[in-house]
Length: 237
Length: 321
Image 1 (spheres, rainbow over the protein chains, first blue to last red):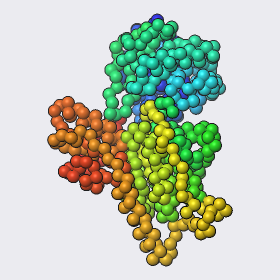
Image 2 (cartoon, chains in turn yellow, orange):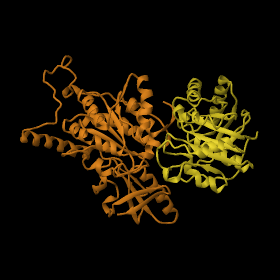
Image 3 (spheres, each protein chain N blue to C red):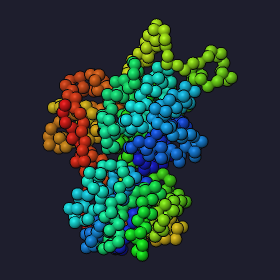
Image 4 (cartoon, each protein chain N blue to C red):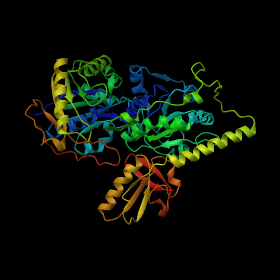
């Protein structure tokens, strides 16, 4: 099942749910599939592990990364560059927004209501059931409500991102898939896709998975690890 | 409990609760504010208290107050905030009260930056506040270690009636790793009636407990310092931890490292090994041992070259000084 996304896609979710890794890998995947991709790092609330850290790898692949001015790159200041409004007014290909965590991180979206007027963005909630407070269906729905209230937007789909970082097993992926399916049903919105570490993709038993699977190559790693090589296209079950 | 994927800052907050600490006072500062964000939600669920002070100076004395009353209490901050708390830490050490301080270090000196750094080593291990005060220091290299050190910190603080510091950096605070909270590390405070100012009604002893750090009589002050000195010596003798990596060979060099930098160094040791060069690494997670030859296996033979660590956006890079 192919993963197809275009237009304005906004990645939201609980703090630490994996939004940035999903956004980076989604950008790489759609770019490899021939879609022009612009990715904006809208994480204004946390100065660590943001998509700006992967900007060089992304730009090498021809992905347009929209960031605050270089001299403010390491600041924990809520800088919203005007370029973001521009890309929302004139979206092309896939216009991807990587938003900060929880409802606090999603607050920035309310400020972008004007450039998004008349557009129909897809707002996708990333869920990792192995994280505190999103380990129950109820917890995920509560998070959804909180984000929607602050963002003044409706969440339109779910992304399953069950993982324990490099300790993720095939069983974790399958259990996570079953979990996010419940969340999607309970919230009456579609499950857009799930993720798996690229190394597990071929081994994964996909007979019960009826949605696309995005292979993740981890980019935001601590300094004693190497990021996985980006660029190879290995889609989908 | 099952494995859960947590940020270091969240895991530190949860570990304190699992250790039986229900009092957390703090003031926000990057890169440790997630501890407060986690506990503001979590403490009410377990009947605990999170109270934000108006500054780190205030928080330091809120900790002193709760510790003096015999309550398990802890705070978290980052480098400049810990400097502001150092006055209270000295008072707490002088009055011999147990408390736990977590420093999620950022770059300095001054306001420095908000990215990770391990530059508060001297501050933490060689005397933090004024006077002859010392901390018991533990420096985790992983989120799991941070959890276990926080859980051990409370009984250790009570054993020595002394502040304990967990010395982590922005990476420990911000990175996510799978963690478990070992049940066997849950403890209860014992013997606090001997010193805590928690009321006399329930005590058998009718001796008044007094929490104080003022000793105007120089003989009394000297006596208190000798008591503290004996205690610090006991801490150093009894609480030494060490870890060695690739030292069971005829190594050509030995790296001494701590905290997250030890994980960078492990990778370097592996890379050098792949090139046929044997280099070992020793790590003192207790923070005391670097300057104490012989504490870490293999370090007797080592000539230690102190290095400042420096990190920029291109990655870690050790530069000699």
